[in-house]
Length: 360
Image (cartoon, rainbow, N blue to C red; front, side, top):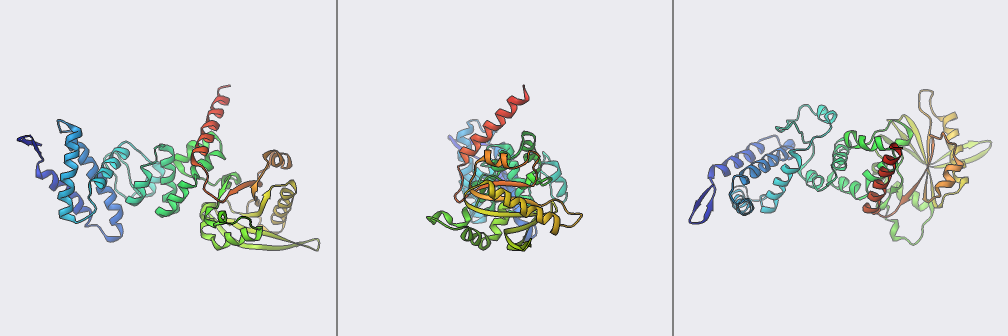
């Protein structure tokens, strides 16, 4: 950096070095351009931070530096290098320079390069613009891992974040599993792992209806089956709706039948638009028993039954089900996005309660 009559100037080689980083990244194959640019933007962010640290008045110099660099790169590359964009690259470096992701995930992508700290990037720049605004590190890692594992688009990442997926899963598990979410994402190892409470079905558009029937709820789910499968999580395959079976000369219909290939079992859904009653749980128990005894293969795992209801009394659920229950579950569904702040508060209280219990 040089000063001439109180005017700050910057060595042009600095601009050229950054330009070379961007030019080299753009030479990569077209299918890898987006990911290559993520690494390039990280490098640009690093160079900006290091250059700013050389300035005598860092705040003033940083402001001047970004403005001049923006003008230089915009003239050379036309668009994409506004001062705002350069600030985002700088912030990207500041967030991820000290951030490490699960080693398991990194090992799955051995072909990807790593920055000097060993950190790898797996998603598009747009994904990381969203992720780096998540201040909770564990939550940020969870959404990054889930985006990679499920191949989420940016739209789906935003939807899962807005629906508070992290909080909903964390609230339904124990403290140790919450810590694992940041390392492994959502794991399906036992029936409880597939359960969410609540399920968020804002994509059905039912909030606009003053009232609706169970058949309307079912039809909306079928019409939005792809989004519903994403809400359910990994490994789900749709089997059928209103699946009929006959027992003791009576006909019964299971509202929705899925199969989860990770748990290797059927997953049955019964839909209720009102408050859950103990008879609803008893009915689902019969459905599960039938599938276990008549439908599942010897090497498959026991069937899971989920009663999806608008409202429930947890005391009724607990009293109706056996203490060692691992097959029948009752979950609420929401037709609007839940309050993220309220769920975060509940999670903090739950973690605090569990920590206090551990200390007893």
